[in-house]
Image (cartoon, rainbow, N blue to C red; front, side, top):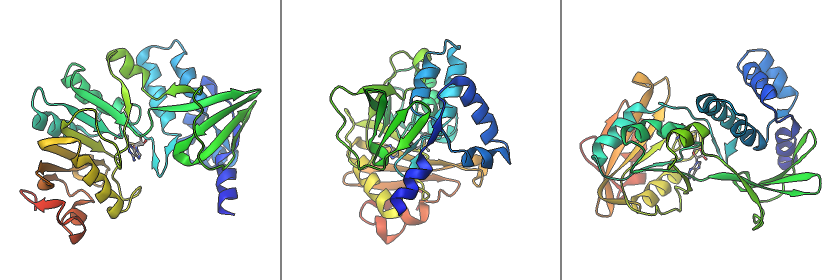
Length: 301
Ligand SMILES: C[S@@+](CC[C@H](N)C(=O)[O-])C[C@H]1O[C@@H](n2cnc3c(N)ncnc32)[C@H](O)[C@@H]1O
């Protein structure tokens, strides 16, 4: 029953065109119209992202539309919601702690715009952009476009104006599947060498150890339980050099200046809770027995 409801909620009518997307984005932010659009089951598929990339609009306009469209997609329990300059305090902390040459990795970077501050400060060098999803994969089978949406555990099909979430369990992506890159075109235009690498915070290892890892708006209680977040923190430990920093940040109006972060310094097998700003929601858990052995008290104890 739950699966059928999920299928119905995720299926609908799609019109992957720029005018439709603009109208939809305007409507979805207008009280009253929002409910109407949701009830009308208007959907967009990853094709809209390619449509934006090929639109011929100036890169900054493409970038803004691309990030707005990203807000319509999910990755497992998390939304892809993002914007530039969302976590300036975490950016400053990462830059300061990594020094001029230390590698900074941003994990769960969505389409990459949230790392623009880091890329600009570093002239595009020494910043790795990573996310569990680097692309959406699809294959055309006759008149059907099949999206292998591993993240949601369901395969979806686009046929004419219909977008159907089949509710099938995740399938192996065929070797000849094509990709819709999730790297924001504005980031690609400003920093042609920027790449979005696949990296899962629960299981991945970065290609080289980082001096600082920025993790903004991913390890939130709305998405993960404290026990799950502990698994992610333990895994990220392995991608940091000794003395490296994990900066976990959350952007939310309830915090002073709209952002809170904790900065954990890697020391041998653990982290030291070295710094915190504005009472991040994870702070009580980091100080609780759940994290004992992994996160030790420090300057922010
Ligand atoms: C709300 S967005 C935040 C994007 C960006 N960090 C920001 O602050 O604007 C959450 C992002 O976390 C990513 N994500 C979710 N689970 C993840 C995982 N297990 N490993 C890596 N990234 C993940 C999602 O794909 C999504 O892009």
